[in-house]
Length: 51
Image 1 (tube, rainbow, N blue to C red):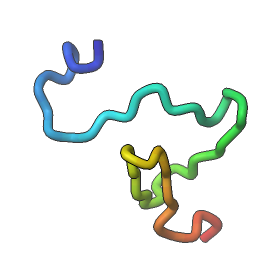
Image 2 (cartoon, rainbow, N blue to C red):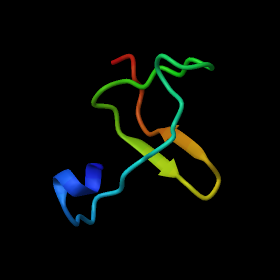
Image 3 (cartoon, rainbow, N blue to C red):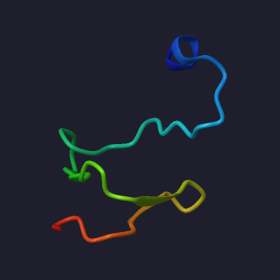
Image 4 (cartoon, rainbow, N blue to C red):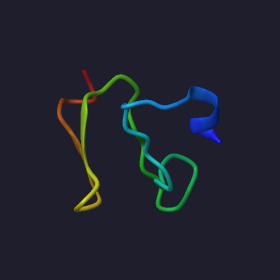
């Protein structure tokens, strides 16, 4: 559905990622640079989220 709305794009789209209001609760800081490793199923915060 998302691709129908935004069209063909080269930006990555993350799907079926449990965070925020699911269990386990994983808080994702807004505006923080992250590295997403889809192969190893990891999200790495690239900066301190408490600044």
